Image (cartoon, rainbow, N blue to C red):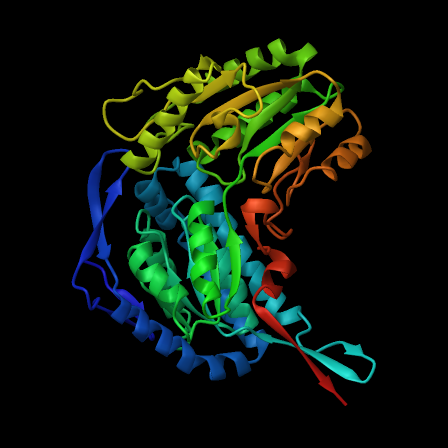
Length: 469
């Protein structure tokens, strides 16, 4: 069994217990990681607290060089890490390489550069000098769907800011976290600056969130779990950053390129087998184009080959676990019970082994249906008609508790931007605009608090001090 990473060394967990890591494509146990304990959390937090004065006073450029070196090692080992992620959580290898490995390497490199250029000590207001200082010890609690990217989005800016970190990766897909811990150790990160305790949320996660020596919690996961984190953290008035669920809309206006809008929306909804918090899972189309949109979506969905994630022809890998597959199947059944029309996919098992779900499309979906309101987190696209113009389309798009991402498609860019401004969501793509890993990412409403990526992500981990002269 693997060990925890505590105070610059690999150590056995005090619990002596372990978590099986299951390959979702084969249903076989491929590894075991420690099920950490509150005692392990005590060691990790104490190490992070002890390391904070030295690390926070290290020149920012030096911090940046260490992060840049770690990013370069991720790139050099990208094949190995991508294979770990494919085995761990089921993403097709090409997705694991491009999105799950190389993109995090780029994000980490960007924080290496930003640490060297960001003005931590600049700014004056009248007779006051303004300083930006690290918030302190950060607990980073990360999910299984993008197991390296979501870690880098927290650990990168926290370390760049001068904070020290205790990471709790998801117990469902933890192996990329162990690879990163090894890399950070190898590039010479001082002992205690980064610590990792694997295990279960109610044990390790809650011990971190409630610990009096943890100054900030950065959490990515479900909205339900985020509420729990915020509630527990309030007892010690910690700073909390939450990146939570989504039910993002792709709004197609009548003058848009319908074929392009449908193709890209389906691709976005099915990326990572639909296990993406920002997935555009609701396609909102004018009634006059509705039948054409449904036909195009069905044709596109049929091209998503389900299979072995290491097969280069596979476009849709398994869901991460049996529990996740059962959850998605439940929602597909619920959609049919509500009267939505299943036009592609369904609940049949496409393969005898593995936690697979067919690429699924629902037509005849009305606002307020459960499958239109709740995050399914699987390869399920719902297509919703509107009849009265873009005001109605915007109202439907804004009509869920979430506000993480979305898309607008229109014949003119400025028109699309004007509609995008009306969406109550943190990030909007116009006419297929590509994801920008240096632009701020985060949600409105119940999709979370705070922002990740780029300069905005760095500033989440900084306190502001004014000194009067």
